[in-house]
Length: 204
DNA sequence: ATCAAGATTACCT
DNA sequence: GGTAATCTTGATA
Image (cartoon, rainbow, N blue to C red):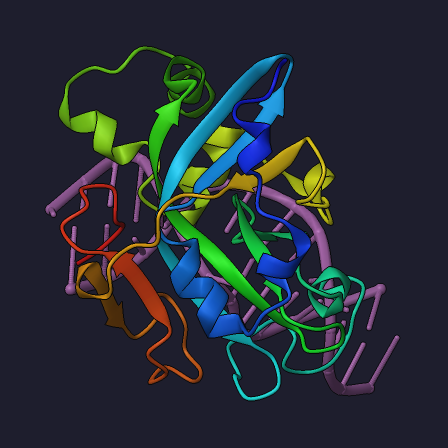
């Protein structure tokens, strides 16, 4: 078997629930990509929620376009976008069809396939211990280490290429809630969630 | 056809 | 703390 622990894969009904419920519950879960028989996996430690019906920062706020089409599907798909001419970022689509809600995966803690992650991101070995925490501490970095680009747009997370494994729910007292990073609209919404004290979180 | 903005990162002072 | 890099998309004409 090429994939790891596929029997624990999250199913459709996990993703089709309400955005903020899914966002918080994604913390602690294991994000997995299988490629060329080499699984890459990391624990999700930081996320942000986006909701096009009330949130001006969401890519779906102004209605459906070719770019955001997958975000309007029902939960359980991967929404990948390209930004600043440089980086890809990936999101987990949530909720019912037509809502335009998704969770941005902002940081993971490497668990499996770490050698390949280092190669994908730096093209060389780590130069020091500190650099390890720069591997996946940001949404662009996550996509670079996992080699996720536009070709994964719309990936069905209930299939075998990219999926998320179940794991124990992170205790509420270990979840920090803040406003989101890097946006200029709807800045006050407290929709960023991360695992307290985890060294892979992008910013305090 | 043109144009401005962007859910970021790395590198500089 | 400031900013360059770099290009796709969506809006406007």
